[in-house]
Amino acid sequence: MATTDLATRDQLRPVWHAHLQTELTAIRALSLLLERQKQVLSEAPGTESPIMASAQDVTACADQLVMLESVRHDLIRQSGFLGDPKDMRGYDAWLGRPAPGLLEELLLLSRECRRLNIVIGAAIAMRQQQVSRGLTLLRGEVANAVCEASGRVLSSGTSRPLTRA
Image (cartoon, rainbow, N blue to C red; front, side, top):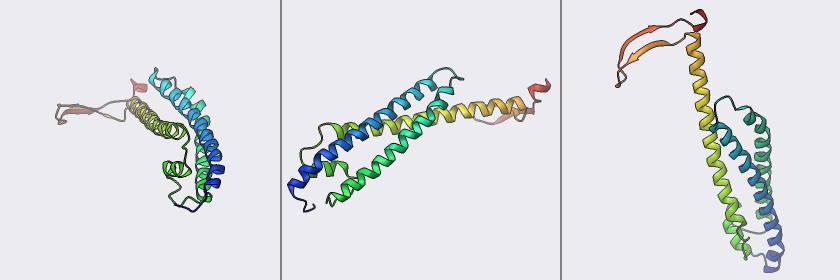
């Protein structure tokens, strides 16, 4: 523990709480954008244009959160806290009188945004794979193979592109 006196901690506490509130506002905005993207992806294929439109907003929110994280680490380092600047719970406890629910909500939303990002990324990858397979079939670049359940090829042949059919 650092030797920062309690008066200094009392001065730091409102700055810390205000910073957490700013981060919480930013992560709430990101969470809403990601939820909208997830919703769009769950709808019928061909509705992806809103995702492209919101991609800049998602990037702007993510950039803001990276900047806020850097500010938070600087705030923690400059306060006299000797622990790891990434230890938000430790710093909150060190200040005394923790931020009422702010920190836990911020951490919860951070985990949820990471989860949503993974889900959205997987959904986009699956759609890209489907489009790629469809284009490959249209170009006639795939051998038509009939396989058993075990994967053993029973017969195969090539196809001609649908444009020449």
